[in-house]
Amino acid sequence: MPSKKNKRKRPDLRPTIHPRNKYADKPPDFTLLASLYPSFKTFVFYSRDGRPRIDWTDFNATRELTRVLLLHDHDLNWWIPDGQLCPTVPNRSNYIHWIEDLLSSDIIPKNNVNGNVVRGFDIGTGANCIYPLLGASLLGWSFVGSDITDVALEWAERNVKDNPQISELIEIRKVSSKQAPNSVEQNGESAMSDSKLDVSCNLIECREEPLSSPSFALPTDMHTNYSGPPILLGVVRDYEKFDFCMCNPPFFESMEEAGLNPKTSCGGTPEEMVCTGGEKAFINQLIEDSVILKESFRWYTSMVGRKTNLKFLTSKLREVGVTIVKTTEFIQGQTCRWGLAWSFVHPARKIISPPVAEKSILSFTLEGLQHQSSAMDVLLSVESFFLTCGASCRLNTSSFTVDIKASNDQCDTIVKNEAQGLGNKPLEYTFNSSVGDLLCFRISVFQQIPGTLLVKASLQHRDGPLSGLFSSIVQQMEEYLTSKFCRRKAKPR
Image 1 (cartoon, rainbow, N blue to C red):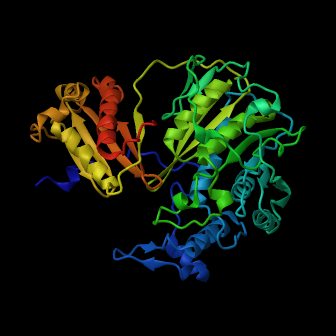
Image 2 (cartoon, rainbow, N blue to C red):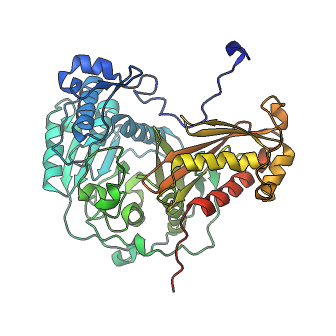
Image 3 (tube, one colour):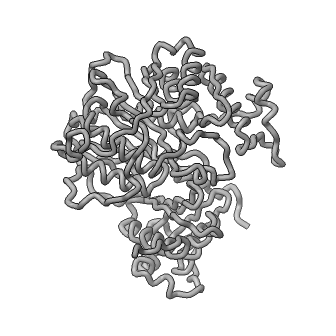
């Protein structure tokens, strides 16, 4: 039996919390918080392994956790009424720190309109007003937070006034309930800008690389027409300049869709959670607003819940002529969200494209999963797919990952789509072979919204001799899993 001392701990290849996040090295200590705050103690229980936990399906528990985290770690007084969207502090902090990274980069020049004060605009700040509170308390940023409902405006104001140390930095602004224009052309401008797209970002790695103007037509989609209240146009004043805007958009098209996840309860009103066309239509309208406002903002940003929407939206941004696009990925537990940022400000420096190299992280989503299919089913099918071609697999059901090592011949088998023809007789292959002769990577499966899973492939040795086959192998795996688990959409008649 091998000695435990010789067993090396394999590195976790999944993205982690932002390094400047207060919770990066020290997650919230429920035992400590329960000892300090009796109101939180009532929601804490201990599992069989002795770990403190809360019931994430209990809105009162998640709200009290947010309250004590903001008070204990950020010295912020905070509360929201029943039913309002309750934010998770570590996840929202990630978004703040990512914007901090964008602003501190030297890709685009800084504007001096607001002096040394960074000024942000929070679209749909909600009763929780979480982004202005965190941005002002952590970094001293100034904010305008917009919203439409009386309840959201009232409680956002309360949360600001209850924190006099930062209250002068935050303005809460009411948005008219009138319907926003649904296209740029209605405002007398074409959606196509005369500016050229100089720079873009690799969707997975956030690298900067030059892009040529696209020659394809933007895909048409009936779900991109937005019919809600104004987002930026009609809310931002003529003379105003901002360093950035940020947005946690309505992810869903109906409250029924929003309530499909039984594992969490974060509340949320229809105005916060839902709009016709969901996040795709909302962010599409935000992009069209930005075409008119142009350099009123250095950076336009939004959170995105579905990777398929991210691909559409980045295509839209190329089409309207932005100068730069950047993306990132926010990971919290088994939940994935993306950050999307763009600008019309011309780069302050010439971006030199790095040498062409194989991407080390690739991912895709499985949408429209059959009701009986779970993340574990997909994980086991990933293992079976690679075992069938003779590759060595190490399955970890607790972290929902499979570590894979494949030789040159086995990689060729997968790329040539011959894996399914080998039957269920995997070749003998062990983890003792030389790493230099193998393609080593990890497959992770994440739950997104109900009916949607994210599958991520992480390459361990980018400079390995077989790394050039990585993307082709992931593509074959994607086709295999899609055909096996995703319901085929009926073709329109």
